[in-house]
Length: 146
Image 1 (cartoon, rainbow, N blue to C red):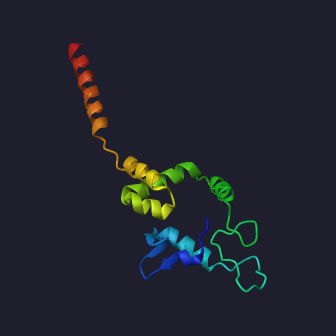
Image 2: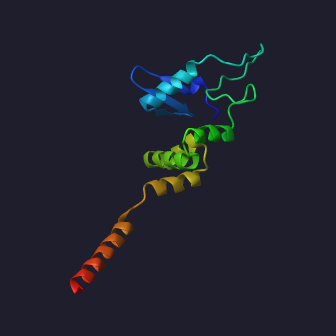
Image 3: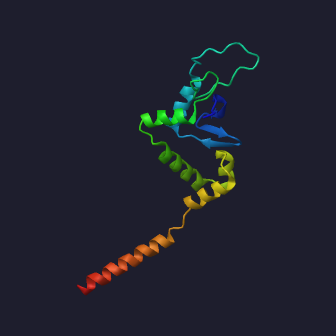
């Protein structure tokens, strides 16, 4: 979670999270929570340096380092947020709205992986609907014989 307050852009009506070159509109409640994090004073004093470490939105246990993936996963699990499910749902939602090159750029995933996510999210349900219609036809035929 290498996010700093500089990744957040707050406008009059909307807030955005900027990852790379692509700003993503934030839901109002999430924007407010992130604004609160960004405005929090730094709890660990920094030793004076020529180049101080970035100010992380999610600081880790090691001074100057962001929270680890494992640490964030544990915190989210404690609050009832199953990380794999939430991650996959978020990726599917992004993949439904973004072309694969932008999804790859925004998330840092390989372009082939992004293409698979976009293909999955924009799935053609025609095959499923055809199978359901065939099942219903068979059920109707069975009922008519009885």
